[in-house]
Image (cartoon, rainbow, N blue to C red; front, top):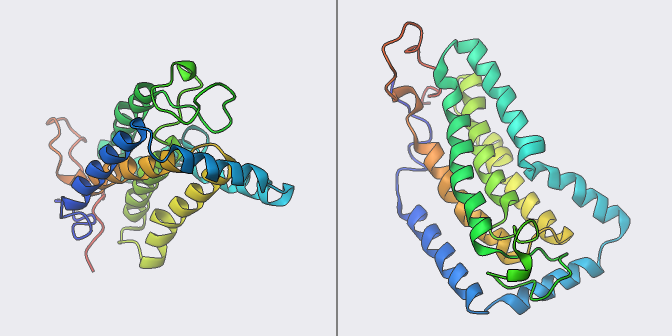
Length: 240
């Protein structure tokens, strides 16, 4: 079975290329000292406008972008359901791909750029390559919240479509692929977990990773000729 998952939305590579170029341009601009004052102004406004009701509402909604606490466990449960239904090792491929891609990109990028979060009390907190922010304090750029929300909701969309054995409807697609991105972006910046440019960078990087996952023909990946391994996982919902 050849995967037909989202072939129209991901057939072109130019959005991926533009996202990479934009990520590089944003990083170079920040390293040169541009947009730092803008980030600080937005963070100052956010910290000055956090009544309890809005603050705690944002905290709850921000869990939609928590990778280890929410997204990974939910994706793992969906993966388990699909494995149980299909009895196929292919069902674990999207989960493994997402884990590997985020581990090899978002994590190293955070370590490389050493940017502190808005709540950091040390010097030069808006700057990249900040010696004072090395270690646990310098993990803000790019935003892991935004990378996670783009990658893991794409995985969930793959798994849910396979479990339903049909393509997602437009409302379902918007609910899984768009709404969480908007909500997590706004709440992450509002709560001061990341600078605005951190979140933009996370969106750009996460978009590239999500599109890679969405275009992989999961049902066509060659497997060893072992009994029971070659059964399709049903990751390609029938075309309408």
